[in-house]
Structures are given as structure tokens and as C-alpha cells.
View: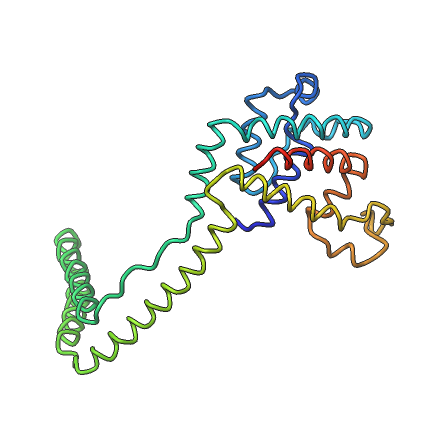
Length: 263
């Protein structure tokens, strides 16, 4: 899952999904337990999980919803359940190290063993087929046996050179893995609160770029930005725009307050 998708999930979650007060939860018809799962599933799936009733929330109620959402999200991220979920989520994104290289001799042995297994299976299957079909099986088995004989007789003079190339490729893979691991540690810090802090900071950086005064126009029954540069903006940028200036100002205040509480 890439970072941009996670940022999108996070902002939409805290700004319009998870509601902290009983009244807000009642309006959307979801329980606190369901709201908590929305926090975790939105992170895990990379897309915001919205209750169907979200579309019924009036525009003038969005500021309260944003404040409630951020408060509830803050509480969720401070629970042991969140810490446990984060550890599992983070580990699932950890880059897998490359396997050690195999020698040409080992690769040949593996291929020969596989071919022998295939031949044995064909011989076993041949006992159950009609007599007029056994000739095809025999021909296939003979061809496979010939291929095995050719492989066993293969010249091995260049094995050392090939082994050296495969070792170099492995070392290159190790170097790339080291870089991927460093990036993973940066994007997915071990401390879940550090991850929360990173996402909140990214929201503040994003919201500074949103032009809430941008004009729209109908194009083929779809509203599009008058300024074409806004049409190329990210889905998250457009989501912030659609949420409106007042809700985002409320979100910004709450996020700054939240950040002040984090180490």
C-alpha cells in the first residue's frame, strides 16, 4: 500500500467517518465498536470505509462531525488494540529479503528431481488409461527421459562463471533490500504514535495547497474545475475541497492541538 493512499484513508477517516460523541454516532447509525473498526479497516484496506448514512449529514453539521471524528480517532489510536493492530499492519509491509543464490549444480539437481517426479506421475497415471492412449504416455516419458540425460551430460565448465553472476545479482538484491528496508522504517515507524504524527503532519501540508475558492462548471453533466490544473489534483486534494473550508479549518485546529500532545 503506498503512502498517498494511507494519507487519504487517514484524513477522510478522521474528517468525516469516525464520530466521537454519542449523538454523532446516533446520526450515522453506527456503534463505537463499528467506528473503531472503521479506523482500523480504513488503514488496512487503504480506502476509507464510509457508512452509507454519511451522505445524509447536512453541510452545516460537518464542523461538529470533524471535531467529533478527530477526538474519537485520537482515543482509538491510544488504545492497546491500535498498538497491536499497528504492529501487525507494519510487519505486513516489511520488505522480504532475497533468498540466497543457488549454484548451477543445485539448480540442475532440482530440475532433475522435478523431471523424475513428473515421469513417475505419468507412469502411475498410465496404468489407468485405455490401451490405445498408452502410446502417447510412453512417447512423452521417453522424451522427458532424453531431456534428463541431456541435462546430466551438460558441460559444467561455465558453472563457476554463472555462479559468480548469480552471486553478484544476489548482492545487488541485498543492496536494494537494504534501501527498501530503510524506506519502510521511515514510512512505517515502529511506534504507532509516530505514524499518527506523520499522517497528521502530512494532512497539514496538504491542506495548505487546497484552494477552497476554486470554481466549478458543468461538463457533460459532471462538475469539473474551471482551472484545468485542479483537475489533475489527487483524489485526497479533491476530497478536502468537497468537504468545505469550514470543516477543514476545524480539522486543522484539532490536528494542531493533537500534534501538540504527541511527543
